[in-house]
Length: 80
Image (cartoon, rainbow, N blue to C red; front, side, top):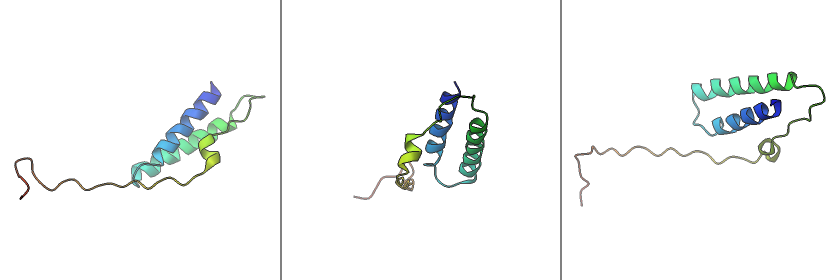
């Protein structure tokens, strides 16, 4: 159960890392990292250490490209 919680928090962290930069992203990542630290401190005695394959690979993530919304209104048509 403890291992599953760590795995889920790592998954959440890696998903959030792909979000565009914003105050929400910063706060969410801080909360997840705090949860991971708490889970690490309270792991049961004799539990095998959790290793995240994503963290171990540490490959650079592609940048998220946000395309601008079309500036046309639904009733407008493009000029031919």
